[in-house]
Image (cartoon, one colour):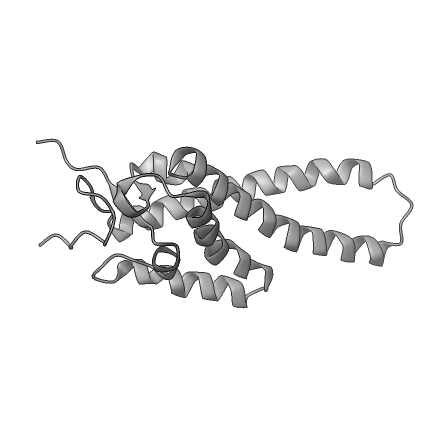
Length: 162
C-alpha cells in the first residue's frame, strides 16, 4: 500500500522511498567530500610555503576543515536546491525536493533544510549522530524527516508513467 503524499508536495508526485533518499544522500556525501577535499588540497599548496609553527598550522587547518567544510556542505545543499530543486545525488536517483504546491523550494526553505542537515556537523561526532538520527525520520510512515518538517518541504519522485 503506497504511503500518503506528504502535505503540500504537489498533486502529481509520490513520496520518495527511504531507499532512494539514502542512496541520494550517500552520493551527495561522496561528491561533497571529494569537492571539499580538493579545495582544501589546493588551499594547502600555497600555505605550505608559509613559515608557521607546526602546532599553529595544525590548529588552523583543523578549524578551517571543520568550519569551512560545514560552510561548503551548506552551500552545496542550498545552492543545488535553489538552482535545480535537487542535489546531484537526488538527480541521479530521480527524486527531487519540493515546497508547498509542488514547486521548487524557496531560498528560505532551502536554507532551513540545509541548516538542519549541515550545520550540526560543526560539532564533531555529536553533529553526525544528530544528522543520522534526524534523517532516519524519513523512514516514518509519512516519509518526512525533521529537515523536511522544519523547512516545509518534501522529497518526491515523479509519478510512474501510465
